[in-house]
Length: 431
Image 1 (tube, one colour):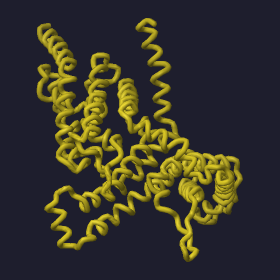
Image 2 (cartoon, helix red, strand yellow; image 1 turned 90 degrees about the vertical axis):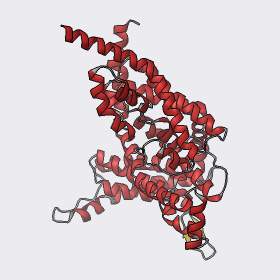
Image 3 (cartoon, rainbow, N blue to C red; image 1 turned 60 degrees about the vertical axis):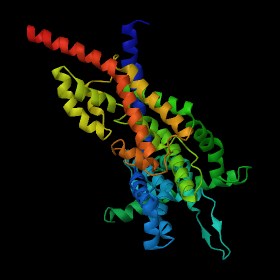
């Protein structure tokens, strides 16, 4: 295939396809719905740090001041936030998707929440009172939350568009009118989910959560927690970015439930005093792979800011180094640029893959502590984020090592670009 045909294929076929995929209403709804859970997770993580800050003197002091059970009390908020991830996700996904269809998003969200609860086998205590297991509302229920949020909302919207609703006079307040309008769509949606549940309960699987774990959650979780799975994931993210597509958002829309589940499992293991089971979590990517942003571009940002000889790159360096410290790299992606720049393809792919490999083996061998289940905001600067994410100084050291490696990987390629740019500037000045 000639270079011209290859370029036409990329511009006319491949890039529009991935742009359409990233902008699809269902993927956007998944991304926005999952994002809705992030604030409560961060708040819960903050109180987890308060309860289990990894300094013995601090733990002893707090135990003496507030009593031996102060850690459990401090984590009340952690429990309340971590254990509603699935519930928040189904609400956020449904609301976002219904809003994109321009139907009453609030009513659709309420029906989706009810459908989500309908999929959960309720428990009964000795007094005959029924209760919902919190486990099914947290990260364990994320896959069900996604499926219900998308499927039930699509069904609800389809029924609304068929005009199978109760019409109220214009004089009726909108809140009342919307409630009555949702009766038929809501009833049909819940009946469909109910029938699905009855069919599953009649099968060997016994419950919808069992089906999800057997067919989706367990296989994908095992794959994602391997070095090979992490490398493939990061390769896809980098390649999408090279074509100007937000790789992180595109991939996270599919894999974030797995990462959040792994994060929650590590948090539960830490609380119980067990060995942390997972290496690959959301913090693994955010805090150890994507330092400076996708492509591990913090090393590149430092090179641009402090080693540039050309005037253009010196100016660019002043603009990109600040955001890069907070893991924002769009100024580099589109300013250097990285997008469709064949000179930057190799280091942009190689740097994060090296980070994946070094971090994975370091954690696997016990040289670096695994992430403890704390949701560190992705804008937290490296070194600080590594310590918080692992609760150990080894996390910060690992980040420093990765940054040095990233800098070395980008060095040759950037210096070649800088020298070429310097020659162009000198030639223009001579003319």
